[in-house]
Amino acid sequence: MTLRLFDTYARAVRDFEPLDPSEVRMYACGPTVYDYAHIGNLRTYVFEDILRRVLEFNGYQVRHVMNITDVGHLVSDADTGEDKMELGARRAGKSAWEIADYYTQEFRQDLNRLNILEPTIWCKATDHIPEQIEMIRCIEAKGFTYRTSDGIYFDTSHLADYGHLARLDTSGLRAGARVDKGEKRNPTDFALWKFSPPDQKRQMEWDSPWGIGFPGWHIECSAMSAKYLGTFFDIHCGGEDHVPVHHTNEIAQTEACHGTRLANFWMHGHFLLFEQAKMAKSAGDFLRTQTLIDRGYDPLAYRYFCLGAHYRAKLSFTWEALDAAATALQRLRTTAHDWGQPGKANLTYVNRFKGQINKDLNMPRALAVVWELVKDDLSPSIKKATLLQFDRVLGLRLAEWQPEEAVIPREIMALVEEREKARSAKQWKDADELRERVRQAGYEIEDTPKGPKIKVAKQERF
Ligand code: AMP
Ligand code: ZN
Image (cartoon, rainbow, N blue to C red; front, side, top):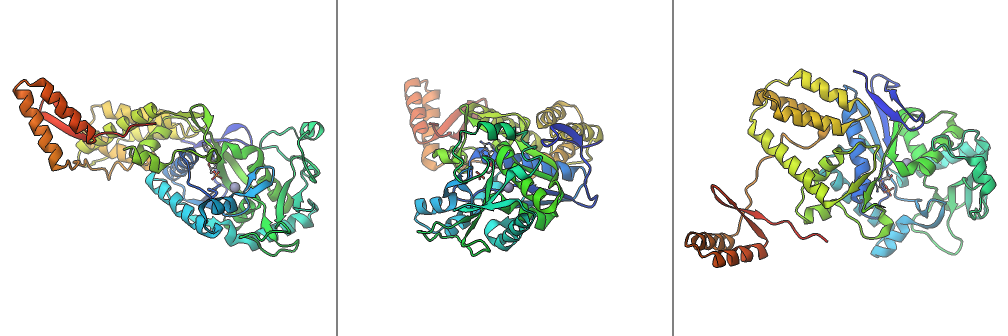
């Protein structure tokens, strides 16, 4: 059963074959650690996690590299504006190094909450300044650079197929460019090295053959991927916004320096939309895993929500859809728990599931197979074992889950008992008032044939 994946570079679904059969080499662009990750960012990391798990399900060993951008990502993709790290530091009244550490730890916690497997190798841009300088020298030696008053730039007009990944119309861009390109020769040219402003000492700056400054954002990924995965590796992935600028420029740098294509497959996760708008960190207010937890959701409900859409489709976030995902996840957990101990997996089902995940990670169809299994009249032990096989890809921690009895405070239980007495005495008004008092204390009473069940109430949403 061949694994087929959509390659943005070819704009086609292609059969996946590893370049080296012993190991699949995969690079995922990581976070810029100047703020928390929002759940939109995390949709991209869930997609990459599914990709990695599907590769592993197919028996491949995966070397998964993720960078941490802790310098050089400027507020504007056109290489202007402040460095996001220095901006974040000023906002927090801390050093750029401190906030990089803090948000990196927070990011790792987010990954753990969503059961996203840790990359095999983490690499930080600031730990690889010499490698980046070396690569810029290489690009310079091949004649692709020029100098302006604020940095060393890549001349994109020197590369015949510049912009192929994004199908950029570079001649049209050049001819019609009304954008203020400053000293840049072409609108698509980008910084490899930026000089520190002459009147200002940056927190993060290094000496270089061109002067004191810091690397441009794109060079870190070309330099670190080459170091840890080689100059041509299997899969490079990220969010769809990386196609026209960041990944296009990574390809340009690698082609200029090494003369290779960088990656065999380019894969991009589409955006999570929030009320039809792009969820941007810079927009200020945003949702993160902690927000979901504060509102009483298990972060894995968000993971389940992501699985409900194909990664190449935009997905609109709504609380109703998250509720539906939380309910489905809970049903799956309790059902699987009731099945008891696993026996032997059903191979027909495992193969059907694999058929769906191997069709360019079709998780919505894979979930449909999950629910068919739930309804099937196979023995519980077979169903349990089969579902646990699926969970190697779903990543819903189904084997670990245990029903938890909420601890209800004694005074709440006293109110509930009082309400029961009022109900049996048919004092409905009193009973309703008592229910309201319980509700105001943050608990819900659900009347069941076996008596009242008390639950922690969900918080109000905005
Ligand atoms: P950043 O930390 O801003 O560099 O972004 C981290 C990752 O999140 C990148 O791979 C982006 O492509 C991705 N990303 C940003 N916004 C969204 C969104 N709304 N939905 C999905 N992915 C996103
Ligand atoms: Zn990158």
